Length: 176
Image (cartoon, rainbow, N blue to C red):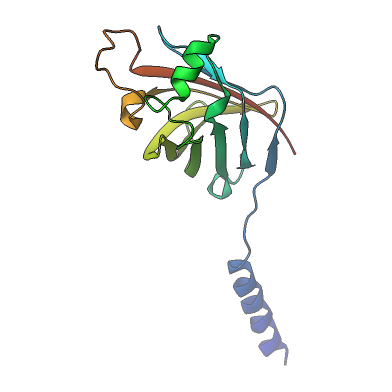
């Protein structure tokens, strides 16, 4: 009887463990986050961020980032530039009210981590990979985005007035 029970018990444990899922720690975006974009012209920030973040340094394969930035929250420090940025010629905030990022992979990098996923801006989806770090319950990242890749404005008639490449600096404190 023992000869039958032990193999059945071992087989049951193996089968059940195959269906066990690894959960990442769920994080809530806290106050004090920062989404800045800089270039010679324009520079500013977005002031509205929401999303779901599951991240576990010990289980990166179960980590997932889904965040939304409200385009209407753009602030360049100049009301006229803000209205222009929200207009049909640039972000077209009425038609495309959010910037969305959904991760597909999180990996360990030489310094920190790398996040790969789909960035959707102005209705255009592109895969992007960028480095980030996580320390003291704060995610930080710095990367560049070419606005023309997402058909944000054009270079026609710009005569160098608006930079094509924008540096994005993120700082997102989180709580459990």
